[in-house]
Image 1 (cartoon, rainbow, N blue to C red):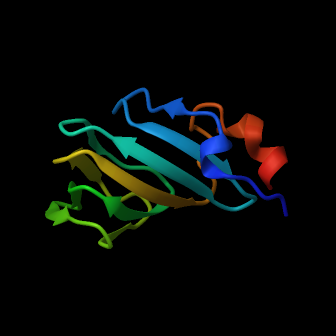
Image 2: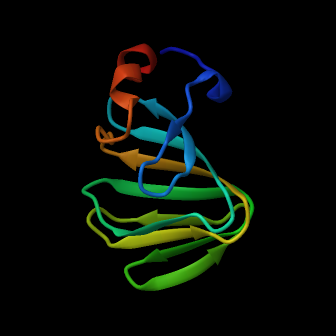
Image 3: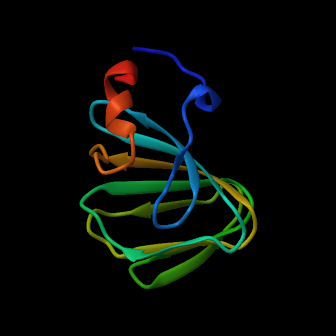
Length: 117
């Protein structure tokens, strides 16, 4: 296992939402540390990965399968594989998202896979 500090990892910009994120790839999962500005959003979408979203700071609105919740620090949302979901930062937010299996479609994450797996 390799150790790293999240802020030593390069910042990646999500091309859809504009969220800033640092990505960590392991063999079977992806972790995203996300900074979202108030008003930024990710439109309704679905993917084959399970997803867990944890709000560390701010206020985030998450819609999963048509159910919408305002999430504050400590709140968790679990998105099943292929479930439609969307999100919006109601205030500046810090989020942690975990995906399984690995999100190979995330920016330059594949290039970091060998270093952190």
